[in-house]
Length: 228
Image 1 (cartoon, rainbow, N blue to C red):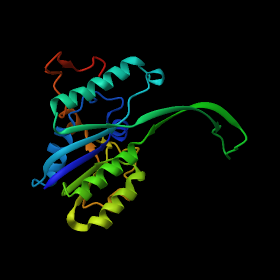
Image 2 (cartoon, rainbow, N blue to C red):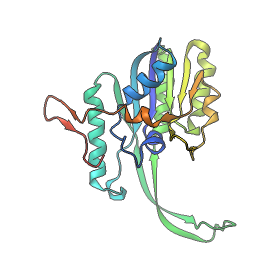
Image 3 (cartoon, rainbow, N blue to C red):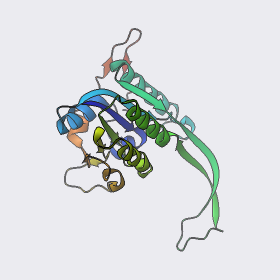
C-alpha cells in the first residue's frame, strides 16, 4: 500500500519536541517504522513531506543559533533520506498588531501594541499536496501528522472525492508522558474522516527515534547541534 506521510512540522515541534532532548528526530524511523508500519504492515513508504518555515532569528530565544540548528536539521534529513524526505517551506510573518489586553470581560478599546508572529502557508501547502497526490493516483494511504482543525476540509474533500480508494490516517503529535495527562486535547475533526487515528506519541518512541549524531555527506559531515 503506497503511503505518503504529511508532517506539520510546527505542530510536531510544539506538541512533542519543545523543551525536550528529542529535537534531532528521525521522522522516518518514528512515523513510518514505529507508527504507520505497526498500524498496517502492508504499508510501503513512498515519501514523507515535511512542512515547515524558517525561524526568524531576531525573535527566537537563541537567535541565529536557533536558525542554524533548524537548517542543520533539515539538511540532515535531506542527506540521510534524499529520495524519501521532501521539505516544503512556508514562511513566518512578523507584524505589528494592536490587540486587547487580557482582562475579564474583554474590552476591545483597551489595547496594547505587540509583535505578532504567524506561520503562513503550511495548512494550504499540506492540503494542496495531499489532494494533488490523491488526484494523481500515486498513493493508496495518506497519513497526516497534525492536530490542526484547518486541515479538516482537505480530509473531507479527499474522503468525498476518492472514497475508499484511499485510506486516511491521522497521527496526533501530542507527547504522552507516563503518568500524566496531556494539556493538549486531540482533534476529533480530523479523526472523523480517518480510517485510523493514533492519539499520541510516547516518550520512548521519540527518544528511540533519533538521527545519528554525525551524518556523512559528499562534503563536510553534518553534526547534531550542541544545544539540541
